Image (cartoon, rainbow, N blue to C red; front, side, top):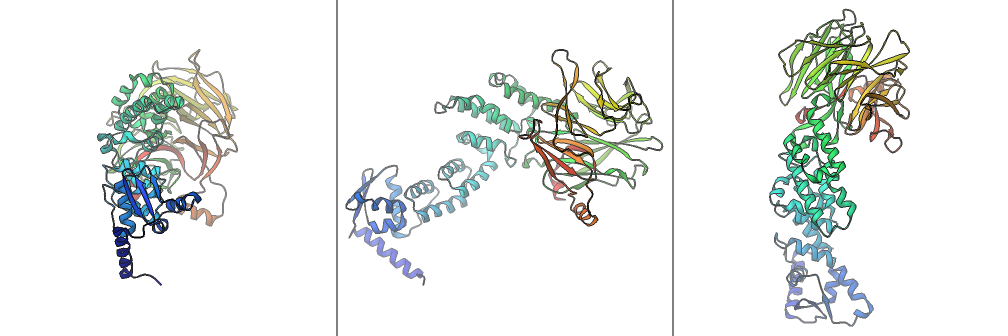
Length: 587
């Protein structure tokens, strides 16, 4: 049996009259200078706080109780709600009633306040409401209000409300992909202002927190996406200069700005676009390996979510006989090199990616007959070197001059190499390849792009026929070999010469290494698919997922510089990192 509205209203009217006439009251609540005559039974029925208070043995005969930390006007509203059933919650008093109802443990008023606050979130009070919700451990309200804070970041900066957030919330804010901003510069400026207030706050007793808060927030931010002018301002800030970690983070961001040519195999978290920017960081690949039926297809996916999608396909200008394929990303362009194993006729394609789509903006007929050459970008030049036919010339093309196809010879290898691959370390191009003279070893050659001179490293790589790939991350350049050996390529501080040192061996690596890339500090290795039943393989391919993915080791398990090592088993090649318009993901 349930009470009708008529009965409910009648009961509330009687309770209201009882309170007004002050008959049969048996307890008095003193708050400040006001006393409220109430009824134990009614207070206990609504409030767990009063139920526990009145049940104490010494309180059974007590007629008056004094409460603190409650405003008399707010308690009066609580009584109006209890005795009269009035909806007393407004924008002006919602927080006060919520706090008082939580203190008195009146659940139905607490719930009503939470519903009201979620339905009436505004930018003027969202930080205050969030702090209250966090204090009262209301996950539903704090989650809703936090989304409002993310959307109203620019307003909260102008009103200075953003500086009311604590250290954990500030870190959570600046690292959020859903933070809506006009410029990453504003985020950096807020970090610098907030940390100054934090360090000036005498209530912060943790000295270690003071020392590390700046680097913690800069590491959580998208520092690489701030403007060059903003980064240069940080470069003269004493707090950054004398914080070794913050200074290194700034150097990394400047390095990222200065070298768009090195982004295709390394996407740091500090360069990950937020959702509001309409751009998404993805990994790219060429499908299938090399070329098939004369069509070159570029595919992409977010990692680890999503399936593979076609970014650009059906490039029919490519000769159907061409097989060798290498690719890299330069700024907003994807550069692809192909060559014909029969005629050694090379082709190069450049695809420009923007919100309008993919445009083949240049068709470059490469300078000489090369079969499977190494390609690499350094500054604004595309370099081509080595090939399976024994070519030794090193040639380059100015990528900023999109209308030119003029290649220029700038040097030569000391020895011809096949199966060549290349990377850049400082101003050196490092070329690794196999030689006919040393069939069991691979030669390492260094080309200085400043002096246009070349020298060879004294060390050779053993197992010349095995596959290998260069990797980049903030800690430097690495060489991953098919057997799982990871080597560190760096310049020795004393001699300033390039050296290749053994770093470690990854656990259970694939023996069919195809390509690899570092994406948000995760090492993603592209390997050949395992043998699988035809039906299962077809289903995986239809879903665009292949047999990916497996994790072979994490940073905690080994000493490698990556958070973890993932294996993608796909029938693709040329793994890269890139940026595509977010609209592509919904097509």
